[in-house]
Image (spheres, rainbow, N blue to C red):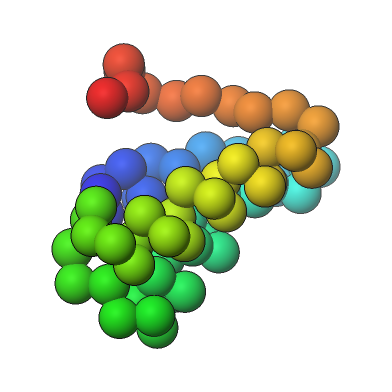
Length: 72
């Protein structure tokens, strides 16, 4: 997950320098997941917060940039 986040941050920096305001869902979700007491990806607390934030962000985004290979 850390490598994926680094890749997303690097892509976000390119977009920022091109004049866009990038948003990475993990910037919002991960601090909240940690604060709420999640201990591993996929536990109850993680699932309560992580994916719902992503879905809410998608409703407000103008575009989505997909990077990397296939997603599980």
